[in-house]
Amino acid sequence: MSRDPHADHAAEILTEIGYTVERILETTDETADLWAHSGSDRLTIEVKSRVDDLDVVKELAAAPGTVVTRETPLVRSDPLGRMIRKARSQIRASQSGYPGLGVLWFRPDPVLGVSNAIEQVKANLLGSRWVSYRLDGQFGFAPAFLVAPTDFHRFPDLDAAVLQKQDELQLVVNPFSARKDPLRATRLHHYFDAGGAVIDLDRLASGKDHFILRCELDRADKPAVLAALAHQHPGHAFTFSNMQAFSGITTINRSDLD
Image 1 (cartoon, rainbow, N blue to C red):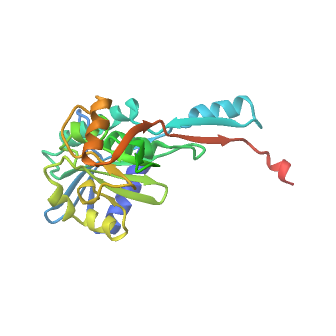
Image 2 (image 1 turned 90 degrees about the horizontal axis):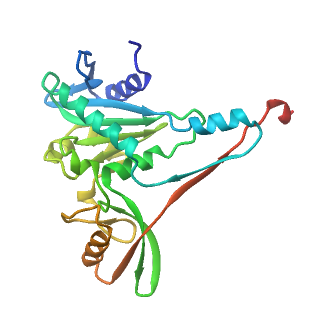
Image 3 (image 1 turned 180 degrees about the horizontal axis):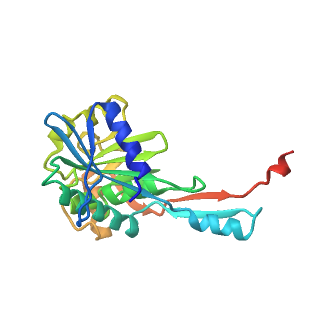
């Protein structure tokens, strides 16, 4: 089987951070991609990529020169949820032979550069949605975390995720992991934390820039979620907002630029 360039790139970054990186041997069972270790600091990593603009490519090919538009809901996605579940299974299958904290490394790979997959993966992992809120007669919009079904809650043994968009990377800590403190002591966390690129809900204050629901309830029960969010933020009234990303792309012949 050919090597995965995305896993190779992740291995290069991990090596720069200071890890010794090994490819996990493929067996008859599905396995993770990488084992990164430095003493007792060990990570079991599955690298996933996604091409999600093929529909745009086909439309442009069928009608070159036209403008193809796309609207992407910035909410959880079932296909990405299945990807996360598979990654977690691959990590678990490898941890007996390659022990370490479980890390999903996700990198969109759009053909035309049209992708909102990072935002959707965050929505899956952290149960995030945009809300509108009213406070003292004023209105605002902000993202809210843990207000929708949450893959990190479903898979507490998936300790973290690295989200890579071209050369921009973020580390997202699983707030439901039992191994948050060991994760925060890793080279991986120190590297991202030094660049201000860690999302750790335990260390974020909940307020007008981003709200965080900190209680146990059925997150599929939207009225209960909004009521609990209001209870935790006295004086606020919340509603969900259907935030979408909009983009338009066209093709240009080089001869048209001459």
